[in-house]
Length: 305
Image (cartoon, rainbow, N blue to C red; front, side):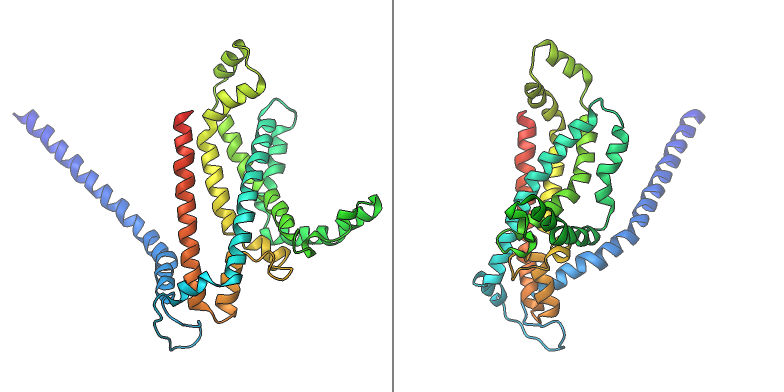
């Protein structure tokens, strides 16, 4: 009887200690929850609230206008222009980044000399500030490339691509892809290292070509990493701001004005705080919908492989 009672006491003591630990864990999360709510959740809810008003961001008086801001967004040419540029830029950059990053990762994961050094070099752009990268490439596009074009006699390189309304977005894509490849390459390398060597040996015994080996062995294993890279790249490119600001400032004219840049300029400097708050709500909804569609579609492909 004494042994049974002692065991019961031990069980009770363990349960009490576990409850105390659980409460401590919950208490430790309170500061993070407060900070997140203060600097993220509350501002988001405040922005949604102001989207139904006519507040200019400065005055103390404003009135509710209902859905007027959302209705006006439909006929706003500047808004449509920014959405067209942003989606064109995001889709193009996401595809190019993932293709280049995957090829680089395969190369760096193979048996080559100085591959650890090369991995560090390829990751370097992710460490640098986007604004600094933008200013450097702005100089390259303005002076270095035209100079090379003059010497080589290549007509398309003689002028600054960022000054051409039809081609400026390509310059932004080049810089964004160059900078974004760093992180994506590292993620793909991590994925490639999870592929068992036994699968490659079995594929070679079956007489599979390099492409068949990649498509039927490598890619199915790294499919989760592909999903992560695609979703993160699309989300980041849809939120593009720094690249555009440092390279073109939205120009020439409004040719490269992204949604983020339009919301920032018109909302804070243009006296359209409430109007651009409505635009940011729509923008936020678009990003959520696109991310959910990407995740569901790509995860379904993972299961089918």
